Image 1: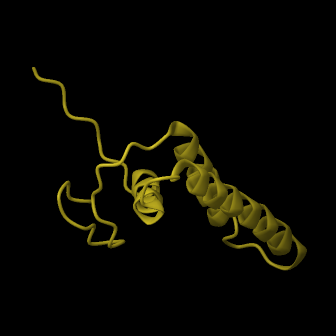
Image 2: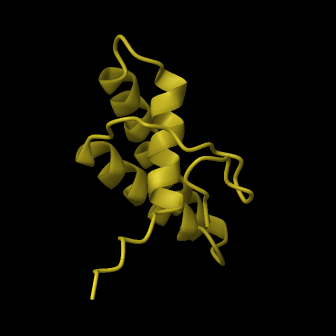
Length: 95
C-alpha cells in the first residue's frame, strides 16, 4: 500500500496533491485492463489484444497531455497511475 506522504515502495510513485479528472481515471483503468488481458494469450489473439492495449494507452497519454496544459504533465500522469494502481481505502466510519 502506498504511504500518504512517501513514495510507494512497490512502484516508486510518490503521493501527489493533484486534482485528477474522472475521465483520466477511467481511461487508465481501461488501459490497465487491456494490458492485463494480454496474459496467457499468444499468436493472433495476443496481437489483437496488444493493439487494443496500445490504443487504450495512446488515449490515456493524449488525454493526460490535454488536461496538463499549464501544469506539470509528468506529475499528473504519475498521480493518475497511482490512483488506479494503488487506490487508497476510504477512511473507516466513526462508531
